[in-house]
Image (cartoon, rainbow, N blue to C red):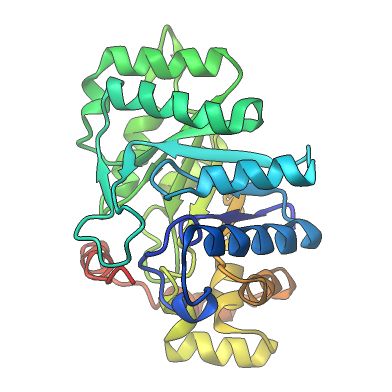
Length: 309
């Protein structure tokens, strides 16, 4: 389980884009109901051996839920990562017109870093730029880069997550950033799955350069689990696991993937996801699965069209 982590994107707020999520959540989805659901999944993950939890300022109350759980349980061996750059503006409404707003500025960073530290304190191990793209203003903002380097000097690792069809370009560009002769980023979190593996080579390069590589959306926001392509279903049947486990097993088969995140929202869903560690894909099976990839532009267009529910 050491390579598996839990992401809280689908648990910290009432609405998200993951397929297969709604019927696993409390009917009301109020703050207290979602807090209890988050704690249930965190308990199940910890009991199973998962020791990495990933949050973000834009994940509603995810950091708050995680902080309360850590305080209540007293676990001192959980690696905590979070992200800044998006602000949650959904007002705890499923039908909000806008759920999050992105801003990569020095002011946004300082505000959100203070908020995160207030909740997570010294338990924060890694703080990441949320959804960095190749054209982000961060690349030209020397003051922001210097502020990020200050966090690294204080013992918090600094990383970035990526999104969009040019993830590989973003990873390579960000890994070249230096402040005072030192590489700025020591971790990268990117989308990689059977439908969208285009960042693979760049992530391998980052891993070989010493960066910690986290993989998000290994199930394509639930699409590979809920409506799996025929090849995924066939492999799942052969291994007697769910399609979700096969999708995550394909990620685990990538040696450069240091931490692979599950986005489970219930203990049952988590158990099904964690079965990925029991799946040893044959070379022919992995090749068959990798043939499912679609052009990145198509993948990200389809992802952008997923409804918040």
